[in-house]
Image (cartoon, rainbow, N blue to C red; front, side):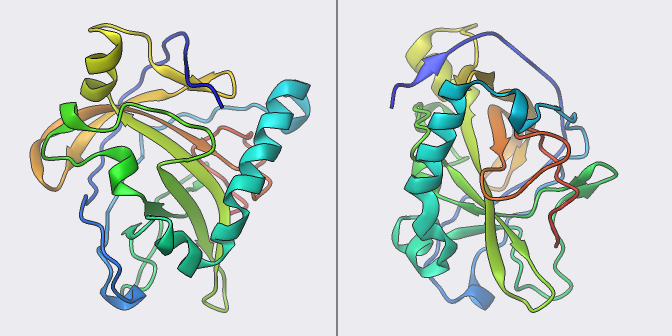
Length: 214
């Protein structure tokens, strides 16, 4: 699948997240905390997406279907929770527009926070940097979507200073800026949530999903 760049869409949020992957049992896994209160609602109903985009989304579903099994996700490198759904009183990022679920991060695909400019600069639709899970009433984790993220410094390292943000499925990744553990300074980055395993009344690419549970 090709990697692409297209026009800019920018906005600010406040958040923090950890960079340390771990293969430990769920209760001992690294917790990442994210506060996405500044994200907008992007309303792009699935019915309004073109056939080429729908075909590509179907390919991503096939590529990520195995990750309904958390053991398979861990084996594929998705080893850091954001936040940890098994922590006491755990809850996922929420707003009036909905919830994000729990993020399962592949740190090598994203890059470490200590040196953002050295991070991975590739957005591959078939290899998202994060998986999105919801925690249901019975405690089971269910895959609901994926998230693409790239540090801005890494992106500009490959594409030049001031380069337009990457795009996937015809959508520009959103600009965000917040601190990550491992780096006291806010890190500029681009990100996009894609709800390929759950319906979302707010739209396929909205950060918030009111149908997702924590």
